[in-house]
Image (cartoon, rainbow, N blue to C red; front, side, top):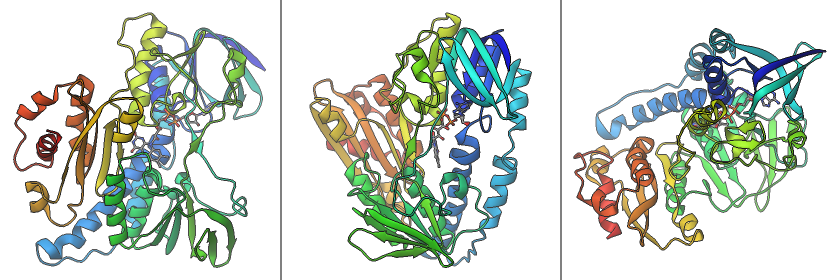
Length: 458
Ligand SMILES: Cc1cc2nc3c(=O)[nH]c(=O)nc-3n(C[C@H](O)[C@H](O)[C@H](O)COP(=O)(O)OP(=O)(O)OC[C@H]3O[C@@H](n4cnc5c(N)ncnc54)[C@H](O)[C@@H]3O)c2cc1C
C-alpha cells in the first residue's frame, strides 16, 4: 500500500471537481484527483451532453413534421443510429476520458483511478482500480465532488432485470419499439419525448399527481398536453406494483390500471448519494444524510470542501462549476463572493423547454413571502402566434409584493431556457419590477412575452 502527502485531494471529478483540480494545480498546488469512473463525471458521458444531442436530433424530426402546417411537405425518416454515432464519436469518444485526463495532467495534476473515501481528518484512502490501495494525506484541502448515482426504487421483481438508467439509454444504438419510462422528472421527460419522436411507443409513468412536480402546475399541465398530443401515454398517480422480464420484454403492473408491456424499461426516478461509502463520518459529517451541508464558501468540515450535486443546491452542471472557483478561492485564501443560490436556473429540455429560476408561487409562499403573480400564454403572444406549430407554453412571474422585485419565474416555451436568462438577471440583481416594466423588449421575440406577464403582474 502506497502512502503519500500532497497539498490537495479531489475525490470525484464531475464538472466541478475537474475544474477545481485544474485550478488548484494551476495555482501551483500539488494535487491528486481521484476518479472511480470517467474524468468529467456524469454530464459529458451520461447526462447533459449526450441527452441534449438526442433532444436536438428529436427536435429536428419534430420540426420536419411541422412543415405541412407551415410550408408544404417534408418526409422525415428517423434513424436513431445517426444520433447514437454522434454521441459516441463527438460527445463521449466512445466513453473514453483520456483527453480529460490529459488536460488535468498538463495542468500539473496527478489522476488516480479508483474509489476514494475519507479515512481520517486530512486522509483519503483509495481502492485503486488496478487493485491495492493508496493513502493520500492532504496538507491543505480535500474537495469532495462525488455526484450522484441513478436511484432505483425497491420494486418487486425489478432487481435483476435488464432495466435501463440514463447510463444505458444514452448508449442505445436504436430507439426501442416500445419503452416504459418510470419517472416524470426532467430526465424521464426528456428521454420520453426523444424516443417517441424517434418512433418508440412510449408510456410515461409517474407516481405523483403530475409530471415535473416541483415546477409550477401550469407548466406541468402544458407539457402533459404536448406529450399526450405527440402520442405519449402519460400516466400520473400511477405506482408500480411489480416488474417482470421475459422474452417478450418487460411487463409492468401498475396500481389501478392494467399491466403495461414494453421492450425497454427506463428507470428515471431520481438520484442517490452514498455518504457512508465516502467515509464522511471520519470528518464528523452525518453518513446517513443525502447531502453534505456546506457554508457559503463550500466548507463542509475542517479542511474539507464539497461541491456539486452532493451539496443539495441544485443538481446541475452550472451549480457544480459555479461552486468550484468559490471553493478554490477559499482554499487558496483568496477573496471571492460567497455562494448565492437565489437565481439558479433549471431547464428541462423538452419541447417546449420548461425553464425556471428562483421560486415558484408555492415555494415563495412557503417562505412567507407576500406573493403576487403575473402570467401570459405563449400562443397568444405575437411570436407564439407567428410560430404556430409547436407554440405551446406560458410565462409565469412570481414577485415579492412588499419588495417589488421578482423572486421567481417559469418559462415553458420554444427556447424557454434562453428566455429565462433575462428573468434570471432580474431575480439575481433584484431589478425592481417597475424597471422591468419600463424596459423595451424586442418585437416579435419569445422573450417579449415577459412584458405581457409583467403587465399582468400589475
Ligand atoms: C440524464 C441526465 C441529464 C442531465 N442533464 C443536465 C443538463 O442538461 N444540464 C445540467 O446542468 N445538468 C444536467 N444533469 C445533471 C448533471 O449531470 C450533474 O448536475 C453534473 O454532472 C454535476 O454533477 P457533480 O459535479 O456533482 O458530479 P458528477 O458529474 O455526478 O460526477 C461525480 C464523479 O465522481 C466520481 N466519484 C463518485 N464517488 C467517488 C469516489 N468515492 N471516489 C472517486 N470518484 C468518485 C463519479 O464516478 C463521477 O465521475 C443531468 C443529469 C442526468 C442524469
